[in-house]
Length: 574
Image (cartoon, rainbow, N blue to C red; front, top):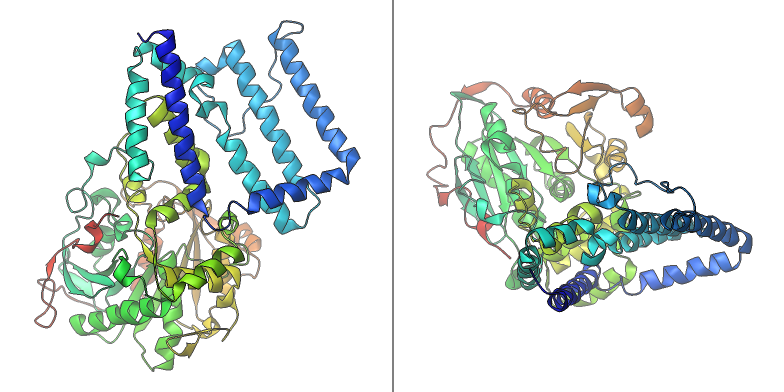
């Protein structure tokens, strides 16, 4: 076992390295705006309470009384009781080691203080936008200072160190240093997965490629297929294989099994030489080019289009360009967790502001790359306890290797975006909400008016989605003018969307009526068990024509196989 001086020295080394890693992470979440925003918001909060002395005094009195009760219980001056309890779903203090008197005191001390801070933020009389921003950054702060995140105040860490004779600490240090070098937190045992090995293995071929994407055609698994093929447009922020993980949870495998000739765009992770790409290019060289190839390869006039997340925004802005050019290529579109109306975008709006966008716009003329790791850290900050601190504790303080989980492997396998494209996205979609304002901007020389999108549309949203709030996704029903089916699934952005029929888990809600208010829609919705995929494929049948003999192979004379799926682009790591 380590001697006391050695143990103390090791804890200091671990703490110093952890602080260094944390600071680097914090600086990279919102590099242009983060250093300014919290300071300004804290100043506003202090100003508010300095002008409301009575409210400030009330908060302080309750806070000090709770601390006094907690202290008197610890020293035995009064019966020891729980002054405050953890919130539902908070698993940080579930272990029995936290019930020991000293650590129970540390835990409750933290909970009292964190709730006091959150209460101050939530009851601020600032304008609503400032109040929400104060609450967001306050939550980031209180999550970061949890005693569970530090070796000397986490009894689980101390017990494991003793039980392993210090080996857990040494292993944790190795993992911390390795992740610091990689610039990301390890969330799963990455040695257990390989793209093209046990992930993204639905049979198919790459039949076309340009500098922006590869087009995959999946091999038919049924004797007959519907005449109208499906083009899948995944998000360019991540790798496409979230839709083709393993056989039991692969959406691509399921679609093919239902008798659809399926094509998928595999976006390339942007390299410096592609840093000039604009949103127009993702339309012109992306969706339009993919649709052109599908029409020629499948010898059809039209196709159904399934899009996911930001892929749905690219598809939606492509439709007006097509209409202006007289290109009637889409039979229907599906928007899977897609936000077109950014009036209420959720907590992600606090991760950037006009200062961020303006500074980046200065750089767009010379191009550049937005790192996929930066984007991943931003998304992780929205659920910091689950996606950051949980791994800090288990990996670095306890020295444990996280279990293999395909979804988390994909989550750490990000893709870069071109700076001009991403900056345009932040300004026009998030900050100015221009997709709701007909003809407020143009793409490919065409004024964009989404109210004229009259294609049959299937909209799927997830009830617990923290990236695309379902209420915001529902607002699309008031933008598009064609027939719409809106379906709400259980769970979050990924687990709600990728809900395989094979497990038949969770549920989804349907309502044929589309009132203006989303709460009215939900009040009248029917809950159905299982995966929403079944509902979607049933809807898709009516837009897919007759069944014909399945193609015997992928590709054509004009578009022969370039390489087997999943192709080179998706295997590139940043």
